[in-house]
Length: 237
Image (cartoon, rainbow, N blue to C red; front, top):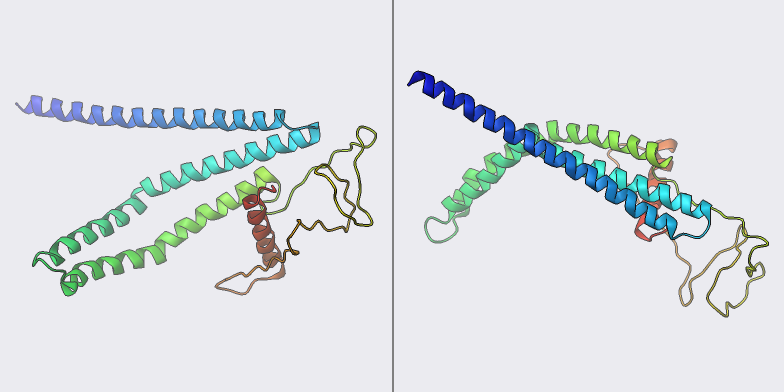
């Protein structure tokens, strides 16, 4: 009987190990397929773009942004699956469930009963998060910040590509201003402004909230970050 028990434990351990290996393999396959999908989408955008310089920019921009988002998603999933984060979150969730069940045992909500169970659990979670959790998040954030810079050149700079089309097609210019009679390409000069029809000039005000004073370098970095995010949302990057 003892041998059978030991054999059963060993078999269960092997099954657990095998299950974990299958999950890892499945995740690896998913990551690979996702990268192929990103590369395929990037190629389609590049092949649909006129001019090699623009196509190359579109290819690199799309590919690196897709790769970055893939890494962010994978690290986030790993982050939440790690016991250091998973355990406190699960503990708080169980406390919420228990507090709710106990608070409604009398048929109506008993706030004192809820507080007696939930408040201690909340304090424990809050203490852990502010003293340990945020440090772990900061470590990941710093790495991802550097990764974006590695992939994109500068995480928050506004990149653009130019193509020399002189002598290939005729492109009107508006150096002295004027009414645009039809939709099409236009040659813009440095220092000119483009104002959308029926709209006023756009002024962008950025407000940064920081727990400590920012030096000139960090202020510039935060400004570039805001401009980068805005350009992505507007589809300009």
